[in-house]
Length: 199
Image (tube, rainbow, N blue to C red):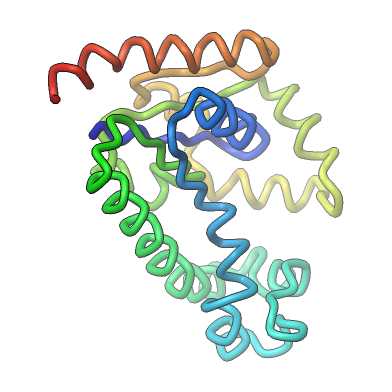
């Protein structure tokens, strides 16, 4: 089984690209979606204990939590210490299941692949990118996003040019959906001989 790590900075089109892999029949483990589930499940009581007042009816209120940790490195570390092991456990279950089923190719969609030292968990890395202008426009269009929040998020992320340098494959989502879809198909096609060789 080949494990493809999919990553990219905020607003680069990673979720859309993950969807394209799924459309091509490649199973994807989505870290963001896992966090979302955990926020209304196993992680909620742990987060409430660490950050009192950040949950409502047993579900994490993302705005309240964001206010509690944004711009506070120690608070963020505390949150990551709760969330990262839970997400990792879910990803490990996903990988084990597909390994048992003989799935040839899977994608781990990990927003902070480089930042969390996750490169050793994957065989190849796909980085999604776009121009700074496109990124800025996309991110600032998100509900509740401000320049200050955007800058704080960017400051925590490995710069885009370094991510591209360390990638095995690059998908530029700024060139449109069809171009991105073609790039996804090309990656799957390129890995197919390797998949056959492993079987």
